[in-house]
Length: 275
Ligand SMILES: C[S@@+](CC[C@H](N)C(=O)[O-])C[C@H]1O[C@@H](n2cnc3c(N)ncnc32)[C@H](O)[C@@H]1O
Image 1 (cartoon, rainbow, N blue to C red):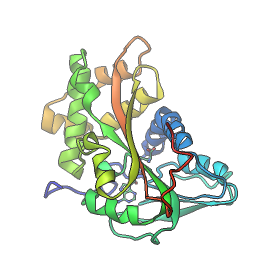
Image 2 (image 1 turned 180 degrees about the vertical axis):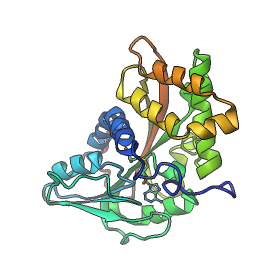
Image 3 (image 1 turned 180 degrees about the horizontal axis):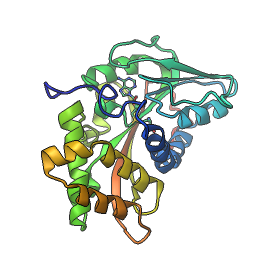
């Protein structure tokens, strides 16, 4: 981590910020269908114990709870205040937890997932090793982290400039690493996981949830965009108009997903492994 970095949620992107619930809700609306598709391919069973790390507004944890009616889902976050109590399934437990500091029981979970969290945390490789130990034999891990590469080929100069600056500021201010996911799934194999795979998806901005999430992300760090990259109020306003306009077409961040399984207790292949 950059030595002056202050961890996610302490100064930037605190859940108490006025627009953070809207930003994370829009992010979830953009990516939940990809995450659910990836989880469905793993083959969730009704009696599984699941863990979501850094659950944000909790939409994936809520969905998991409906898939595991005879099991249990634990949703963690540094700050759980954005996870609504309303309509919460009885098998969903919410827990304040810092994955860089706090532990989980070893071998406890059939499934662990985490989206857009590991890219932000310190010592992510050591934390990953710890998280893998919490998988039961045969249990699955699904990690999804940001891939910045759609911006590199953007034909829209202002959009590319602001978007790349947003990621650079997160790296400078919070120690975020958006290249970590580019090596997926090697990090999972290095931790002994088998049946590993990788997949990436990206969504359009324009009048979409992704456009809304990306506008709110840039506006959150408007002062830094100006200080470090000279992006003016007028440029940021033009960028905001672009990403919320139905006539603007471009791709936003990619979600790079890696999955893998802790070797089952027997040598038999897992019949549910997605082809
Ligand atoms: C970019 S948001 C993603 C939220 C959600 N996973 C999603 O994809 O919609 C990152 C989330 O990770 C949480 N987080 C960041 N660092 C964490 C840590 N060390 N331990 C647990 N959660 C953390 C934040 O509070 C925030 O809710």
